[in-house]
Image 1 (tube, helix red, strand yellow):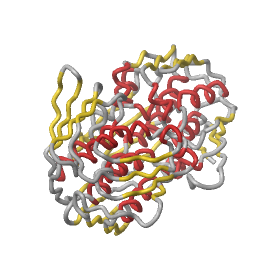
Image 2 (cartoon, rainbow, N blue to C red):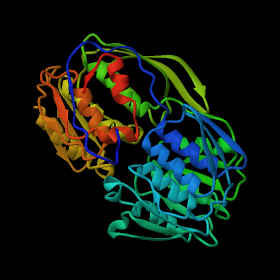
Image 3 (cartoon, helix red, strand yellow):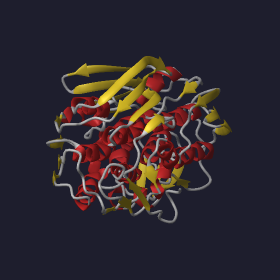
Image 4 (cartoon, rainbow, N blue to C red):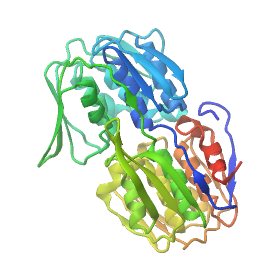
Length: 444
């Protein structure tokens, strides 16, 4: 499957229970950061378990374009010989980040404080997404951004000549904004301080510490204040990428709604800034056990055993949103099978993802016979106690998570569920169809 080519219509239907072991690919967020920080370090960074979806491969190509030596040694095993902080060279061609919103935003941050220029583009979905929220703080370092209206791609970023650290309060609960500012701060003189009102995923901070950066987080009356000392020498290290909890969400949720299911998912990342979905599912009555808890590569992990469950609707705590922002599409599918209504508030960030995910899920759920209510920052799903009609076609808007969510839905509906295009699934979870079929899912 390709996120850049011909649409691929797909369909799923109810069948046998899901059983067996699901070996989820490496964490997408950690994979992006491992390649970027490996390129900014001195020495050779060896990465194992790297996700090899199109988004990550585009980031690997970008790091090579900026001068790092990036090699694939084997399945999920990569070697990055870095150029050091401030060592990026000017790329000879446009940097095409495909569908990777995280990739392009973090890469822009990483290069914004080097005295070079680069032009960024992507696929139709990425070119429609706002970049001003990233370039606004980068301009404070002395960079200049020239893009289309609202800062959309294609966009040329001219790096700062003599960057100094900045103090910036993020207006949105976004790990991408935070990470772009911190990566820019690496090559800036003095301290860079990023303040976020709500705690977002902290993979960047954890990995920066691992590479040797001086970074600390303090909770204050204003929120979480992160201080990074500029111009460190990052030293290469070995990184074992945990398995992606956002990808794990799909077989986990499918098993919860398909009667008789019982699956095991080994080595799933349980970073507390990413594990909100699992807490929410447990609150809804999900039978999920967390076995063999441990830490790998600075990240907490566990083996998840998941069994079919009769679920109840709940009001999801709004403060939990940053820790599960990518999982609301599949949660809304689960909510359709629960008894009672599930209320999801504080989720307006979903409107600026690969597509407007609130609208996409609302329209898709309606097409499957589910009653919903929606607003600018909320979605309410009226559960149908396990009896969902299905039978419709969901528009995916080149969004991998919308496609996978509705394909999981069709495994438990009375009638098959179709999606107009499953091509974008390859950007984050290229083995999705094979993995689900291996568990017994009927997806074609």
